[in-house]
Length: 560
Image (tube, rainbow, N blue to C red):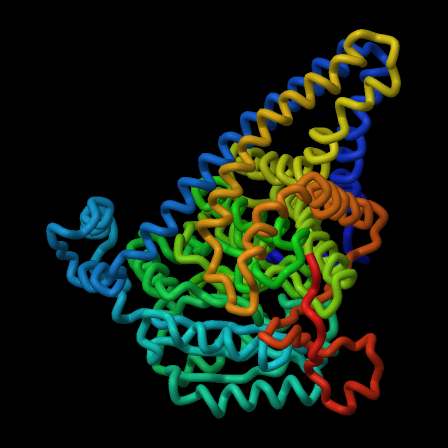
């Protein structure tokens, strides 16, 4: 079986390194185009910038429409009786009250999935890999409880607590506590300690959940279950599934014609603590939630991200996740894609996984941790070299047309991430500063401003959806807090540049120079009615506090 693993840095030849440099070169070239064209001919610069603005104006409209449609899908599917739908899928019989698409699914299953290959909903078990490092009980335990609170038989749920040895004795005690308290409520609960010194691994979630996966594969031999019966969902410490998540996932899995070649991606929504996070973080969190919602309707663009699900049988084929990258979630799409020679799709699940917006014990540190989180996501640009090398240099059976299309979308996504906010907000000023005496140089900023003003109407849609999708306001906040939830959108231009362009530029530049990014866990905090409880131990606070076993501190709430 050919290797699908990322080569170690010392094993990357000049072609691999050239493609690691390529994203940064392309980004800086695109950012320089307005200046280069302004020096050649101001008209060229104007045409480029106006065309760019119009392109992204159209994209913004499409994104707003998709976000609204996705939001409606989530609300509609939240009301569905998934237990009944799964029962009907089991029997391949439906009643008149069922949705039309459900009847069509049953007909498709009858026609295309032979009885011997069918996986029935009653046969499905869900393994939840809950990964944590040094988060406290206040962060981790609500996630375990949220899993139990779903509308699904808890005896069909298997909880695997994947915790880090680097977290110290307190983390191990937390894992033991959770096993003892919740062990009887699940089909099975296991705690797996990931050693911190495995050769060839980089520090990150990938090594942790892969170690747990290999342990789980051994456990499977004594369980009486088959790999095809088990769907694995990976969760971070603060990830809380919607009540219908496992029901919707079971239904989609059992109605998939070739589930081995499929991943399942729930919509990631960052609103667990949205009322508590500072305003800039709320804007970033809400924007990311909207993007994930819209992306669920663009299946050709969908990739594994954060919490995601895959059949255990497929994970065994890929030897679980990569242990050599800090973006093991998105990279898992490409591992599976190449393992099965391009025969891999990602299906959306419109039952969300709710996560925390970035929040730590201080305002400044929260701003910093938000940048650290986004730059880690942006490290997905490292997949460009991997996909080029594995898809075009190494032998494979993937049709070249499909490979080129996938590769082009990957490049375009990271290029837009790093360049779009800067060009949209500042691009029109470059011809003005370089050619202030020309008519176009003077008029271009005004034209760009008018286009941006029209595009700003899309924020009204974002504002409407953000207010409609908010969880109930905690009693500790007064009415004026709702006003801040609307006014916060004035931060959008700043957050777009800092937490989109600058974060992506940072990651691409480091990759180009071979300064490979290490994993930094996003610090988490929980707000109570009396203040903020830090959700993890911060190693920078010294060994004295670690020896004392301090896992939380009560502090003031962060300001807006």
